[in-house]
Length: 267
Image (cartoon, one colour):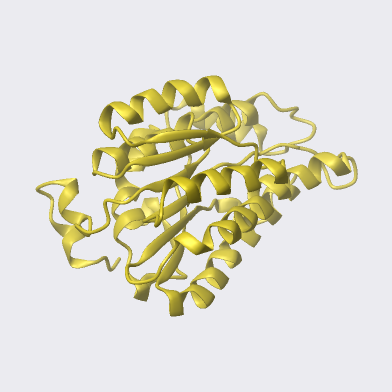
């Protein structure tokens, strides 16, 4: 896998970061799990964090952690299912930062876990809104503070579900497949304004989403036992480890790599 030259230097994570890009990163779903780990990793590398989450309590705890590392970090309560929330969050971000180094679109939900024939239509649409439409909406509103003289980097969190159909996960599979293509489109259109976009599949990470999968109904999800066994066998990966692996891509991918999809298991 080809990376920018500085990424291969193992002395310090700071060495794979372009030195001029100590501007804020926006991270959605930053209150727990992989999003929180990614945000902390970015803060440790010198970037103030603009952390978004719909869970105000957990976000407050995470935000205090980020602010201890980077004092200029802030939190914004935002439910990506609510377009008014997205609009308000975007205005707060633009008021805070004249330019942002990048966005990590991490927020996502797995539910509803139901067959196409039986799924509630509103719940199916909510999944698409949070996992896909909200990404477009937030990015669209933040375009005035992206790119320009320096490269802004957008990262979307992909999944193996973007590449294959999984019974019971139709909304999630559709949203993640759409998100991969959205990143390609963003890369194509953003190139002239120095905005890059990549998608990264983090593997099977030990997060609340995995707990939701294991608490689903086996009748609705034929692969249920597979995920139970993965957990039982200790095959879920610590979010902090994954965040460390993804850090170089999030902060250092080149314009030439824009539009690419990466899998953390292949890095």
